[in-house]
Image (cartoon, rainbow, N blue to C red):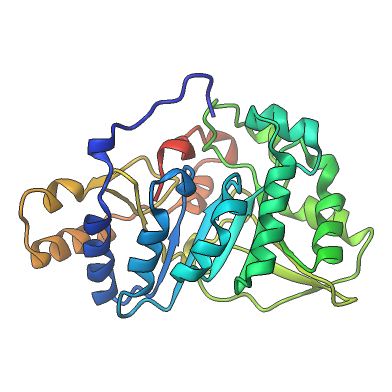
Length: 301
């Protein structure tokens, strides 16, 4: 987050009813998985009701959430009861002081307690997302691997992407997936798992059977060729590709009495405008040509 965040006015945020209308339309196109992300979704008032509405929508097979975990201890049970099946917690350091430096609050133990409660309430899947940044937490790669192994968790190591609020990103701070895997292999014998089509991660399990980890190589080995994801931002923009600056306003259609068919026609056009992704950008120029795209804290979705 930057020192002075940009807050989106409440009137620009989609209502639950508007979100569910779009979810139903997406289902007509064959979408069957929804992830509530951020920004931070647990600051949304009555987010459990949104989870329940999405989970009860015909055609939805799976609903997950990515959260910073600050309110997970309080909300894990109600979210599970509402129908949330999986939860991913963004946790970029296992060291209390370092965590406080980047999050600007001393909440490390609170987040760990939230993960503990999430395990207790029985989510189908619990994952830990760790963005690895050179000079910040690259000395914790083995600590995260050990956490996955000892606690039977799924830790996902993510290459640093140009979505930070302070625009600090640069290639000199990117730790490649290859380097991450090499470090883990110095301590553990691992087995690569078959990659599911459209998956963002290459997944591994420990040979001794405890836990798993994934590596998301968004920068060094992008997965654009079979990407099948769309993002609907909190304020009603369709973002076909996070690495593209183009956004397409569907909120104005929702609020101008457009029919479902008109919205479907709009979505068809938007999907055809989806950029080729970061993979093509790198091939056409170089990784060094990438620049800050958008801050995730204002994206939501």
